[in-house]
Amino acid sequence: MGRTNPGPMPPYGIIQEFLPDELRVALLDWTIEQEPAFAPAGFYYEEGGQEHGLDPETRVGLKHFGIGPFEEPVAERLLARLPEIMAAAGYRGPEPRSIEFEITASGDGAHFAPHIDIPLGDGRRTVGRGEGEDRMISSVYYFHREPKSFSGGALCLYRFGADLEHPDANDSVAIEPAQNSLVAFPSFAQHSVEAVCCPSGAFADYRFGLNCFFCRRLG
Image 1 (tube, rainbow, N blue to C red):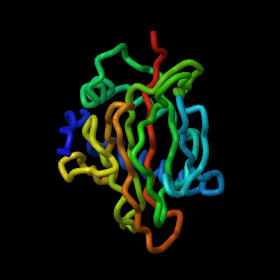
Image 2 (tube, rainbow, N blue to C red; image 1 turned 135 degrees about the horizontal axis):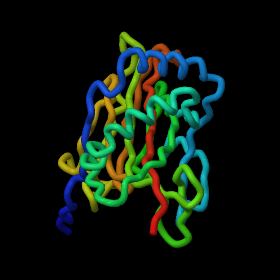
Image 3 (cartoon, helix red, strand yellow; image 1 turned 180 degrees about the horizontal axis):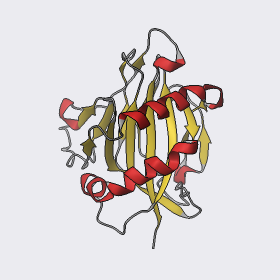
Image 4 (tube, one colour; image 1 turned 45 degrees about the vertical axis):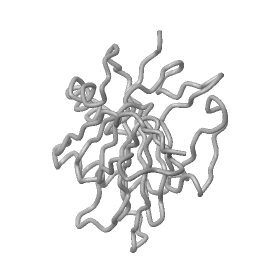
């Protein structure tokens, strides 16, 4: 049987040098200080995302909800670039003003299999910041200690309709977690995180990503 041709690549965009160095370094220092507050990262599964759990075959990594004193200055910069972020993600709906923040910390062996950032199916749960809100745009801000002490951890975006069990080389694009860059894409786009290599094992050397989900109520 011949291979079914997948659809187009999801729209996405990269903004370089997103935060001023002073704010980036302060966020990094704060994140490292929060190490005890990080917990294993899970994921939603089953119809409608009604279940949430851990599975190392699917995801390995740590997560911290919120960014404490940095929420206001980071949100201010995100909202200032919102038209650019919306265009990059191909979003044409009402402006989503609510932003959900979480930090991921990826050490040696961390990864995340192909997934989307919103549950689908009957009885689907909403996962936006506020009650009844949904994620519209996913964006990830990358930051790490210098010199960089990890490798891997690229974000892979997949063509709509791609066969993720038997992917073709042309079915995805890999985006490196470059220092001080922000990547934006639709929350319904399939994506994954490639395995990270961090030889030191030190938390301060991890790959850090600040997930910034733009949310709004549907209807």
